[in-house]
Image 1 (cartoon, rainbow, N blue to C red):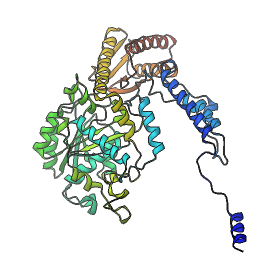
Image 2: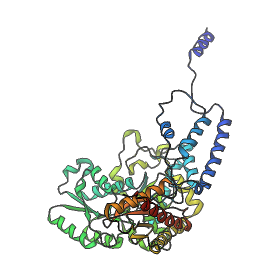
Image 3: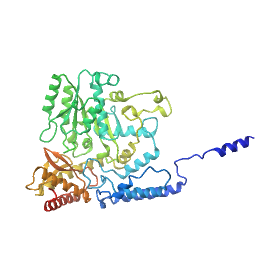
Image 4: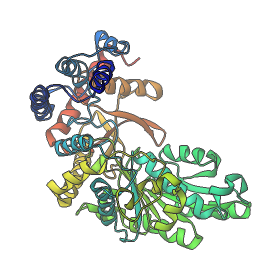
Length: 498
């Protein structure tokens, strides 16, 4: 009777499923092929266009409906090769200079793969990935000259790093328990200060923090596009007189437009005198602190109360990974920590480790640290410092090449590795000159030659080259100048810029 019941029960069971492959040998063979293809992809990156427009049939591929049934993995990989790998943004290419991104590295990509295989959630706990996450933060503190007692956390990128730092600043300077009572209970409206060259993420931060865009005062800049210290001091005094509460000054270590670096030492002194939180947006230039020839440019960054930086820029980690450092570890944790009953610590076991989600907004956190850790171990911090010096030297070299070419002109002298210039187009002014340079930029992209962006500096439209790329060489800069001149002449001859 028991045997009959058991047989009947077994017959009625639905077969259990898993996402693991039926045949691991087939997956292993395909995986070896994928790694071989990946090595070729990076090895030959210089031979491909920086960027290319996707044909209509490729765009249609991404409109396919939700798949309902299984497909062979080899077929899926083929679709990825044909439709995704062939049409990248281009930022790993040696002539990608559009935006400030970094150009990744193969070891970091292996780290991302291994992190995904290991699969740990970095919300915290007692496991190796959590310890490595904290170790990478400690290494970032060492790079910035922060004390071991300081705090920090890895985040998605610079925008989130700035938001985390500014949230701590708000809570420390509000004069009330903001977490309990909210910003409406602050007796005097808070004021934050930064230059008129601030990144747009700071406006988003003010809005997200409930303070509003008007809480952020943009201070005029000097001829070098650095924050005007005297104007800042006057703005603080005026705000106090008007009944506001000055709370934080944001120093910029490398503006997006030109790479200008505020006088961080002067800002640190002023912040101390005025009892302000001193935050540094170092997403572009903080890591210059590790560059032997240029570290003096960010002197004073070690005095900040908080710093935002981006390992996926000048440490060339694959996207995405940012970092925020907070000098006051207690203030950092008290800004974000929440301990529900299901996340209480235990004296032993998995929950006996530190809860890393207590230092930011994410409870679920990816294992971002491994790709940074592996690349730093492989190359050493000294090499990354030399690569930063190399990019800065290349920026100044490009500036020299532009000055030597009569058809081109600098719109602002290079500060670090960002070069703003334009094709003169003698006789053209205003919108016609902008149209000419925009057309040059678009043709450089469409022909796969180089990826540049454009911006406005001192009221003048210009092309912008941000050399944040360990693959860039001198001959790439020569090529850019030659091709810019060629395209400018062709466009003017055809009248296309009109």
